[in-house]
Image 1 (cartoon, rainbow, N blue to C red):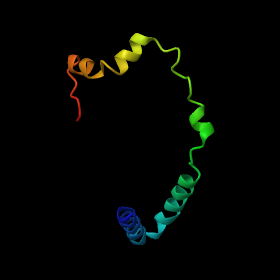
Image 2: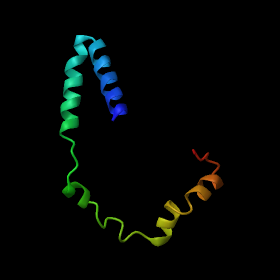
Image 3: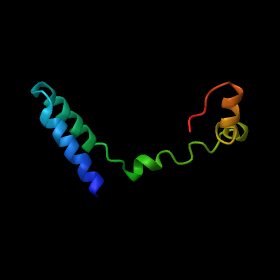
Length: 78
């Protein structure tokens, strides 16, 4: 709860220090955020989308991911 208040206060302070020409952009952005509430319909639209995915490909993308990155010489971020 305290952390949220700190974030809110920091955002308010940043907005107070913005030049006036940026206030419309901030307002537009905030209105967009308000309209981005995820609904159950949005989430349910993804159900079953990987049901026909090849099992070998799925294993490659999940279980073998680290091994494949190391084989390709790519660094793994921790």
